[in-house]
Image 1 (cartoon, rainbow, N blue to C red):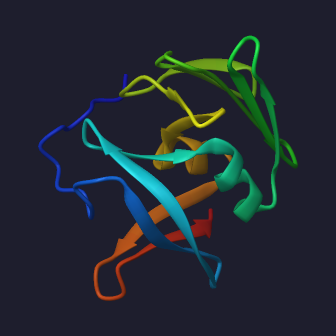
Image 2: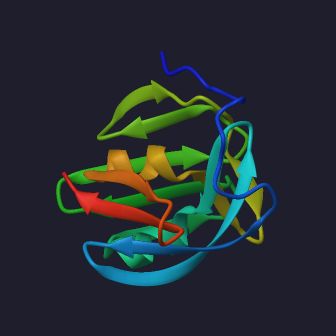
Length: 129
């Protein structure tokens, strides 16, 4: 089971935009720091990763697919379905601005990416595994 580390230092302390580089292409995304995790809109992250996202507002479920990868999350849940296998998350997802926010590390890892922080350029680096 993943362990959350609320004492871990995050690059931001209040909701704000951060630079995100995906395989060398840089853009800005809005992040919310919460309980030792950086939350990001699942739909916006899917967009910059070249994945498809479907949000179902009635059930507050977000489904992201990319190639053979599939990620399904529900608002206010700490369970994630990665390729139809249920896994626990360190924190619950959040419904905000008509989308689901979840830890960037959970979403990126489930879709075949690794996350690193480049303190020199203040950029989140997302690279294919």
